[in-house]
Image (tube, rainbow, N blue to C red):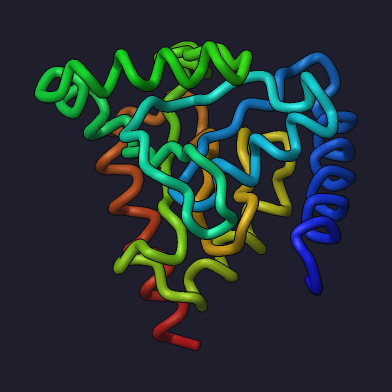
Length: 185
């Protein structure tokens, strides 16, 4: 993109398309470091497009696009421990959510297990693995709860229904499978 405006235009229309395909389901997204301020700008352009934040996290300055706030999220595997150890995190997160008109839902997908893959900063997700997983996920659009705003392989997906293992185990298994496939190619 040649400007922030052109990027915002593109992703706003993309999210509107996702929202249309989702029907009655809410479009819930996580703010991930630099992309949270980006989401805020999109929500200003189209109020209500993004219905909520799926995870709490540390509030940090968003220096990438010059905004005053951002939300660096941890996966569900670490979220509870993070809040227990840092009660101020929850207070700050709630204040920011209220300011932005976002709801804070500790369990946005009910009892459905969610698999969380971090983005380009995740040392376990190579670019090839990201591309392969996104290609696989795109074949099952009804399973996609979240699509990353700014590249990488970060996303929240519904695993197979009634999968017995924990989110952590599912994540490890999927990453191991991706690594094997990428290596074999």
